[in-house]
Length: 424
Image 1 (tube, rainbow, N blue to C red):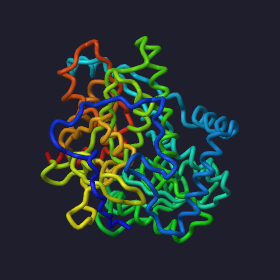
Image 2: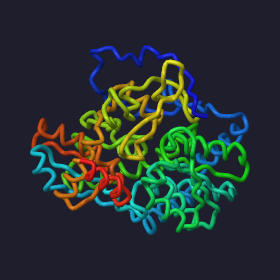
Image 3: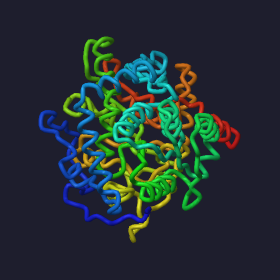
Image 4: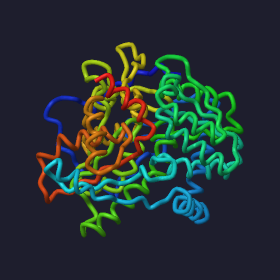
């Protein structure tokens, strides 16, 4: 399942110098994906034929549910009473002073139940699964946060749950493995390939193909075949909607100068960015994992990848000249993925979102920076966004306002962080 298919690069994807400056999309006419599940040239559904009826049924069920007042009421109620929304927008006064530039606000998804933004999506998808009469839940996970969020909602609604996780990730995210098991989920290791998120996704898809009729696959990011990128983005839009309202209250303006978030598959970033796409004043910045360097091992798919098909959708991915998927690397298990959501690829080509990178070393420094200035230990994923902001901040002024998505908390990463400190 991990062999990609080359896609001819259209002129719009040219990497020639002198590319246009970032531009806002027309909010009134932005309608992505189209009826074929395409974000411009990207997206679609490249899956085995047995899954086509399942995806068509899922698309119909999602659209009907999202138009349903009762579904909306149930979804909002669970987000409020169970997840803990709205999450705070925290003014990071000491971090702002330490970086000597803008006023920085943190959108605190780390304070969601289970410790990350992932549960916004799993709540929505588990409600869909119940609506469709599915009795068996499967999921893939990298850092384990999506796995924990899936196991959590499966336990709440008494559904069987199987989570696929790369064997390497199971070692570096042992705490989350035990959390999933405590919640009653079965955690199955992926032992092929790099034994990380890509391989866990392969195994989940194989399972889905074998059990399509009673199984609901809760995908954790804005990746995969249509309608998943649209559906996951919709469930995560609550992040940006809340941030707009909160910023208006605190700053008297709904739009920051910069919104910034880490990008692996890209769900926390798309959840924050979507509400600002049509606002010309807002710079949207996604931060990928540069790993050990862009000339070495990394997971900077949008920065260094080329278009191709992976896990059911056309997007940018890391691949060699024969179209074989390359191994990605990041100290952060949640960013250690060779693909990216197709809407991110589309918005990159539209020059609406700018994509930066941060290395493993920079992320580790950023963990310490946020921890010791604000008393907030961020996930290594979030730390990549903090690291990129630390580079940008000296070029900004005190009148600039930044919203950074604090996508998750760092408890799960302490073993990795401590090991890196010892190695240093």
